[in-house]
Amino acid sequence: MSAGERKRAQRQRDSQAVIAATGDERNASLRVLLAILARVEASETARLSAEHAWAEIGRRYGFVSVTEQARVEETPSRNKE
Image 1 (spheres, helix red, strand yellow):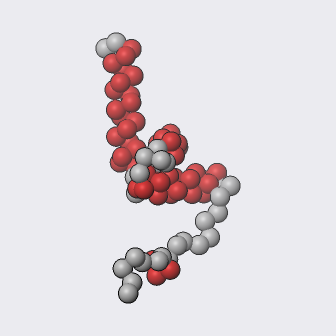
Image 2 (cartoon, one colour):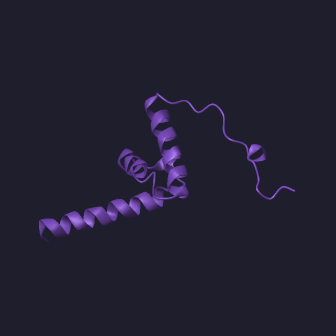
């Protein structure tokens, strides 16, 4: 396997790890959490995953404390009449 083929395979494994970790950031490796942060502007789902990844990194290393979770009831709805 050439160096280019090895690198391509590594990128594919990294991409699959990011997809698998979406929604399960608490069990993801630091490398995967950092990759999630790099995709923050890809979509709304990626942005939310990046928020969770950042909170998890902060929890692990003690520089971010999540004290309050957003409540669904407080979220404005476009469907209210």
